[in-house]
Amino acid sequence: MSAFIFELGLTLMHFLWQGLLLGCACAVALTLLRNSRAEYRYLVACVSLLACLCWPLFDLIQRLTGDAAAVSAALPGLQWTDHITGDEGTRFMLLNSLRGIVGIWALCAAALALRMIAGLLWIDRTTRRPSSCQRHDQLRWEADLARLAQRFGITRHVRLRVVDALSSPITAGWWRPVVLMPAALVGGMPPDLLEALLAHEIAHIKRHDYLINLLQNVIETLLFYHPAVWWISNRIRLERELIADDVAARQLGEPRRLALALSELEKRQFSTHQLAQAANGGNLMMRIQHLLRPAPQALNWKAAIAMAGVALACLSIYAEATATDKNVSNRVDARIDIKSCAKPVYPQQAFKESRTGTVQLGFLIDPTGKVKKSRIEHSSGHADLDEASRTGIEKCTFKPATKAGKPVESWTSLRYVWTLE
Image (cartoon, rainbow, N blue to C red; front, side, top):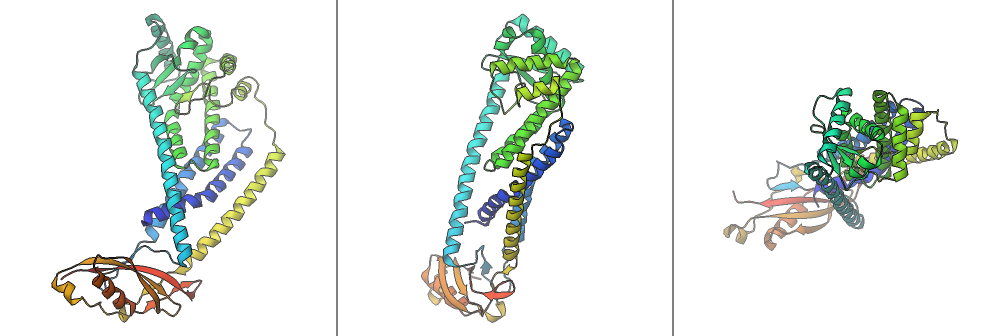
């Protein structure tokens, strides 16, 4: 198994406690900011979600660059390989577990990525279709949308499409933004209320929320297995809708009109679209209350006690993981003492036939540095070359692996390359 898969598996496992720590920190910050502006909570949630991506990414880079295999120049043909120290059973179990973890993660992430791509393709295909409403209705709503965009200070053209297979206005795109309007709302909702919903969508375009939403979907796809990622991402969407409501209400000068429009959406029980900005996102009743009668939120002490318990558990896991990493980092793998080695003798028949190859060998090194056992892990394809390299390097002396400064028994792997000079 390649070093990349091994380190990726460890990174995915470590994110279990890292994500829990970030989720707890985000929850504490949002609780403290519960009565502050939605923009502050939105910023905290966005930073937390970005940290969920950057922390494991940085961790993976550190793992890959910190454990690069060393190549010995003192003994031609001898090369170190990626290996895992420890007893045979633990080594085998760990390798197979990480291989399975990475395989399942890759399969699920690929399925979610295909789902996201399919949604984006649907939006793109929908925007290219002609609107399903009559020509004069289309021109009217395009004029209203252009007027709203101008009021919001948006200079670029905002397209409008009326779609049958849709239940709520949604916004897609940033460079060439488009608002998709359900055909059912064109004739089923009063024009002034529908205009309020369009103002909400224009607020998303003004704030470039579509780009942030795409990044959210990417992070959700990569870190789908952690509940903290979904919770933080959901809070981002909730706070984003509150901000868009505030921006739209200020431009309209009528918070009540937007609240009535949201109330109509709530009655129709529309579904939420995650790949685009929708007017029915978040908790509609909470958004209506926020527009009409915002009230300070009291601290839920029961939830605070539960969160404190989760935080303590998180700190405990963090301390244990840190201690484990420290123990691992204090372990030094066995290394061959080049000065004690002689170059393996080229088998005479193999030399005559100009046979070459690479053999991978495994050696069990005892605490004194002597070879206790040896094996051929991957043959060069020639039995005489394999045996010659094994018996030759078996006579070498090794610097034993150490743990916390004490010599320990361990397996180590290396390759020997047979070449003709």
